[in-house]
Length: 226
Image (cartoon, rainbow, N blue to C red):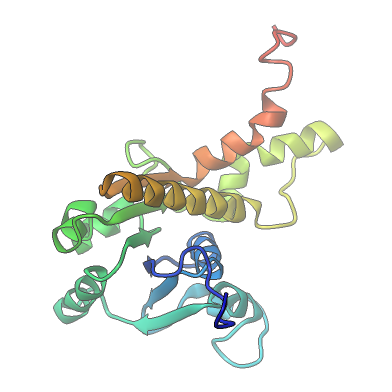
C-alpha cells in the first residue's frame, strides 16, 4: 500500500457480534483479523470468556485478550427496550449480524432475521448454536464437551486408546467457529455478486460431525464394515 497503512480484505465490512464464550468470539476474531470492523455486544457483566482463567486484571482473562482483539465492545441490556433499540440502530449500520443465542432466547428478544432485515435489508444474518433449529434439541445448552461427545470425538479416542475421552482442547468450539467464519465469508461473496443478504445457520454438532467424518466414514463408505 502506498500510504503504508495495512488494509485487510474485509476492510469496510462492519460486523455486529452478539456472541459469547468461545465459538462465536473466535469466529469474529478471525473476521477482525481480516480487517472487519467488529462491534461486540456484551451484557453489563461482560462476556463469560472474560473470567476464563488468569489474566492481567479482573474481567480480562488471557482467553478474552485473544478472543476480543480487534473489536470494539459495547455493554447493552437487551431485555430493556432502550437497549434493544440501541442494538437495532447499530445493526442498521452493519453488513453482518452474527449471534450464538439459542433459538428460544433469540425469539423472546425479537431478534430474528426478519427483524434485523427490516433495518438492514441486505444483512448477512448468521446464527450458530449447538443443534439445528429444527431439531428437538434446538434449545439445549451446547458446551464444548457436549458437542465433542455428540460429534464423535470421544468415540475416535476410544478407537485409538480403548477408552473414550475428550480432546484436550476446545475443538468443538474452534472447528465450529471456523465453519461460522467461512459461512459468513461465503454469504458476503454471494451478496457482493447479487446484492442479496441471507440467513445462515451453523449448528455446532453438524459442523463437528462433518469434520470428524474423515475418521468415522472410514470403512463404512467403502463397504468394509458391512
